[in-house]
Image (cartoon, rainbow, N blue to C red; front, side):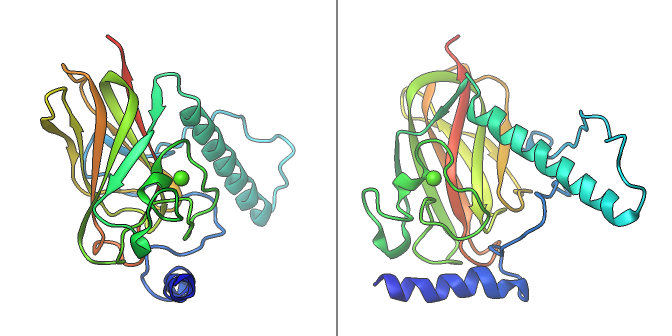
Length: 235
Ligand SMILES: [Ca+2]
């Protein structure tokens, strides 16, 4: 069964260098997002705020300068990933279910919903069993439902996309009575291995439950989610 899986996924993730598949391998530094349709949405590191001063000894030729820029962008990306991973107000999911899973993966199988729990563990953009993905590549509406250890007044949700990024259309959080509240809806600007970061006014209720909805047909190929962080405070 697994062999059946390999081919379509490889086709998806490697051939698409030619085609428009969303899950292509890339050797370039993480891109900054090009457009944001919702003011509250960003894909880290969307805003490039150079902190380190430009290397004084940078060679003058254009090739090296490009390389330096790429390295600085890569370093900035790594710092942002680290900062998010260690955010004291951030929680990683401890339980997850989904509308479907590749090959009907259950438990802790590769691509199961549980692969979206815990801290990020996918290091490269592309197909990876350490992320959740749906049963079909471009079937349309799919969702991932996540539970967290501690109910908080939420202020942000960060979805780490690791393949076919950009297909999320809605994020909801649930109150104590189980009522769903959409905190974001729109066009996901995420590209490559990155977070869709959705900020919103602090919820009046406490939540430990997040639902992420995708339209998998929006970005051709497998759309995979590595991890989802809920950010919030006790008060
Ligand atoms: Ca994962």
